[in-house]
Length: 146
Image (cartoon, rainbow, N blue to C red; front, side, top):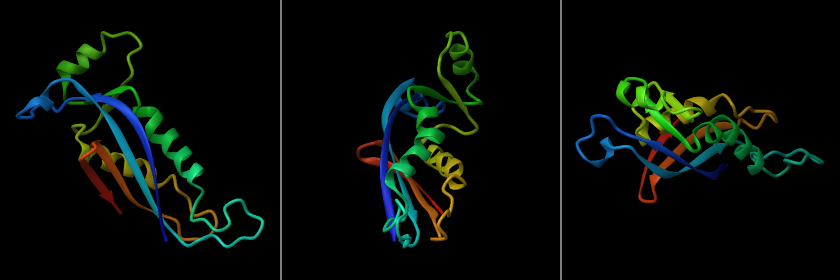
């Protein structure tokens, strides 16, 4: 069985060497879908009985590990010295320095890497993170798969 839940956040970024508009500072309303697979829990008197994992638990983990970190932050590539220097002049600015250029593809891969160890097989139901889908716009997204 697979389950999917969706969270949204706002963040700014730029793609330093992009051939078009994305080289400029800009932001997006991102949406992130998390898909887990596992057996349906069959444990009488358990809050999770009949579920793969409670959606509220899936969301709480993703919110704490990724969404709260990236929401209303500027995501900047560590090699983008010009922007890093600028952001460092802004007191208390929420900046997230990334090891790769913050494209939808790299962000989806990073979210998958962060979340993969967070979803634990507590009930012996073979819980597994299958996919993180990151929407940069309503019509454009990247999938990081297991």
